[in-house]
Length: 636
Ligand SMILES: Cc1cc2nc3c(=O)[nH]c(=O)nc-3n(C[C@H](O)[C@H](O)[C@H](O)COP(=O)(O)OP(=O)(O)OC[C@H]3O[C@@H](n4cnc5c(N)ncnc54)[C@H](O)[C@@H]3O)c2cc1C
Image 1 (tube, rainbow, N blue to C red):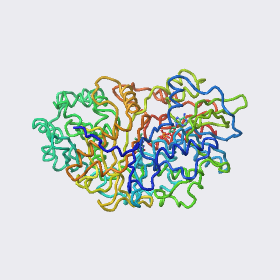
Image 2: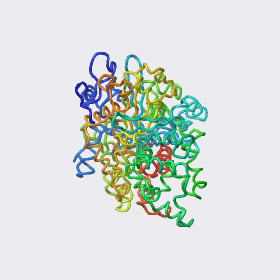
Image 3: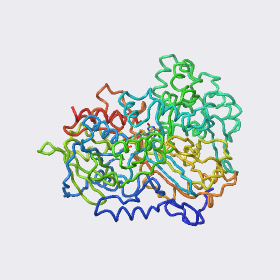
């Protein structure tokens, strides 16, 4: 049942009215401010995008210039040449661009002149911060990238960068200690993580360690019997989770190996385990938000390796894979480290290191989450490193003077600057349009992958009383538009105090994969494009309706009234999300050096390519590694 929004008191995400949202900037206000500042190109003193609500992420004004270029080949015919020359220009101020600036500055010295350009109104790329204020309380949320993975997956250079910004072993240990044991999203994998299913009488949320139940964890049988699904489906799930049968026992070892590498996980679930298609979302909500696609686009092996159920139900594979996935889902060791605004704190620490004046009083790791940043200081003439927002690069070309000319559009103005070197830490798919002189082979390599789209919403609630009724800080919602719902980080790192009682305002963090889950046989890259189009075609009011419906269904039974209990909504749409990483069902096994991303990232004279796309790995450590490589190329 769709709820009607009867009280139109929301203006693109934020409640208007006495007491609600006090201290927040109105989106229109900031758009007005940025427009007013166009002539000077300087940001006004009260410019502070983390507090903006409504449609964020790929916000209006951030993508139009790039789309005109990529879709229609349109860009300005002339540019005003600014009297600015840099040692290095970095296109993109996400983790990779920021890391490239840092690695370059470390190598070339603090006087190196560096300019970062980014098309968004905030830095960090995927690592964005959502910040709410209500009744004197600051509530932080994740606008994108969530957490730092264990250091075992980081290269020496990436670990060094983290240490440079104060995230050393001690800080990581503190982050683990500062994450409550009941907060699954912060890496406490044995915490309760629920399962929420809509029923005629409202949503039913079953708390408990469902990721553990998937693998026959204690109490799995009773938990499955609580699911509002037909009894025969319950019985199949119980047999599957508990490993009562080997569902591949008719195959030889070699055939099993081929099977798990070549058959989709959902095909396995329907054909071998015998599950009805209606039951599949229960097993798929987890991977959809973790990876993007549904089980029709993952091999059995890929699904198992990220923690999907089945390890116990496949004979020999159990032992081989339990190392890979068992630790992840049943978890003793920390699997992630989280700041209250996710990896936005990492971006803030990097920006602070590059441009200390942005937060002169900030110490570092210990107060990064609570420090206010002065955006006006990002792009001052005196800075050796400058960061220019609202600036979309449309052309990058080596000139006869052995310089690189960088053309960009800043708030409607076509401008041009020059540099000795350029690092493209933006999206692979756009680079062929920025550098049309590249070879066709390189352009093809760059254009191969399609980034995985996501939508992350933060919903400010007047208080946490109804949410507490769920009896879990995280739950999977397989049949809802937002497949994961969690409390926003309850971690105390970076000096932040999350809400201390259910009587305080809190944020519900809602995550969705817009990639279609029910289309079979279509390559994931096509589905990601469809997901991206769906994002651009969905106006804020539709997201608002989905959020209100879903939260009312989940929380109504605990006294929640969406009309009065929601005080602000921020929807971070991320049409160009994860870097594409190859999938067993769609991509060949390329020889080393011949994969599209490897061909695409070749140095192009004074231009090098960073960004996690160039590593084909959607993780921060890959963004850092790509930055390191690009800097080595340009400083050799
Ligand atoms: C929803 C989500 C959750 C994630 N969670 C995690 C996580 O928990 N842990 C983890 O390690 N990783 C996570 N990631 C992966 C994340 O992509 C990387 O960690 C990292 O942030 C990528 O940084 P990047 O600089 O390579 O790319 P981006 O963050 O995409 O930065 C590139 C920047 O370049 C800009 N740009 C593009 N074109 C232009 C142009 N023409 N002109 C100017 N600027 C341009 C973009 O707008 C963007 O700001 C997540 C990603 C997403 C989408």
